[in-house]
Figure 1 (cartoon, rainbow, N blue to C red):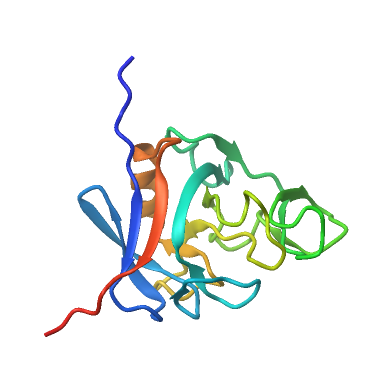
Figure 2: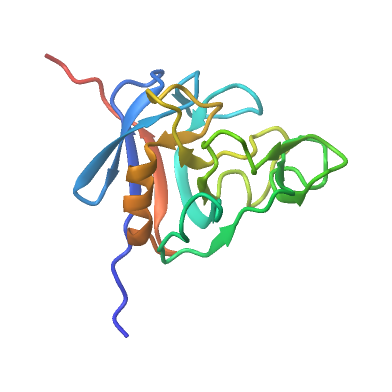
Length: 183
């Protein structure tokens, strides 16, 4: 069986500190939202930055009651009403999926808004997990107008749906500072 080439998601920031950028995928580019504090070399829990780095892509979560199962070379899982993601830095389950209700603080993946209808999970701060270095940093559906996130990357739903079939377990999310364009 022929394997498809690995496709990376490349976020090369031409204006570090801004909360809107372009995500390159193959020969295409998609506008995306970043954290409210822009992108930075280091991320701390709650600081609103999107962290620089080269991150493997782990899996996809989706709301089966709102959209069909996405096609992708990555593992795909439906979100259930009791799914959460631990964001309590001192908890043993920090930056891991959990079932709600949970003993500590946890992000709810089943949301009334549409932000988490589709979630791509990069391996940010997961191997190893470092206390306070960030949790629940996803690529997910953007708010209308590409408003800033809490540190995630937000894409228009149609763009996220379009790029998922191109991803494989070898794909990576690359977030790096670029160079200011000079006029």
